[in-house]
Length: 364
Image (cartoon, rainbow, N blue to C red):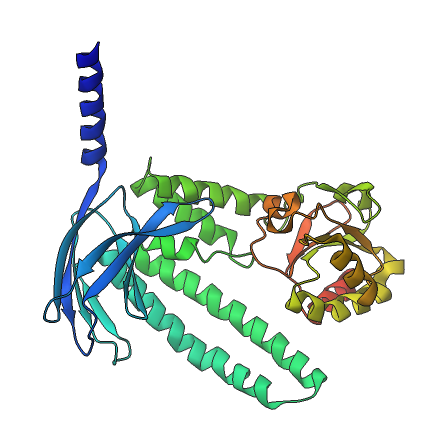
């Protein structure tokens, strides 16, 4: 019996080792006194968790090491205050030229995914400088709230356009490389569902039966569930008086499902815009179902009263572990979904004047 167990354990170990992928990393570093670099990898996908797993020695400005990964994926190489994202596949030999005093500070070859991601980062930086930086500079110079609001609206619009362009650019460039993971970890509510589904299709085609492919498949399903046109998942949480209220109880009205918290500065700054829209359209068939990610009931109620938020409020007071936040994939706030009278999602993340403008279209 003992021999059988030993044979089983040996076979299991052999299988595990054979499933690993081998990658070589080598290169040079100039203008740096660092003698060691750290390597981190994804240890867990849900939630995403990255941990250090190895180190690489630097001698006379040179380094070389062979590493093993459980599957294709992302590694983070850190030297000093600089980090390099490496998107690795089996049997690659990555060659890096690093100079912290240069911009960009590294060159990479021998790894298709890493090369593509570097191109992506450079393209993104270029577009940010051309399209977004001028608006940021303009925002800092103006003093009136009205001008700031106009610039913020222009900035958000430009940001969406830049992201949409980059998604299409990357999908065309990346093919079915592991670099596609760079797209997946940047998906948000504004990402075109067609981009998400095509990315997932390529992942399942090339990386089937890996943890990373399973993660992308689950992520895709979550985004499809919350896509424009989908019926918003029903949720039920207690109000400040302890009475459970369902989101679906507001059917028959246009409803803003709003995720916020008393401790969230941007949420509180956005509240006056939401109040203005609510006061204007509440008698025309508009309502709000606000989910708080607070832990303190006292702070939650004080914020409601101070900001004069006179609509439906609910919370389980579990902070980021809020059950509704998990259903709706909330990882940052403020975040909102606008639902039609049948409970379908018709818009997301309306900021500034966008909410009032959308409601004007629906209820002129």
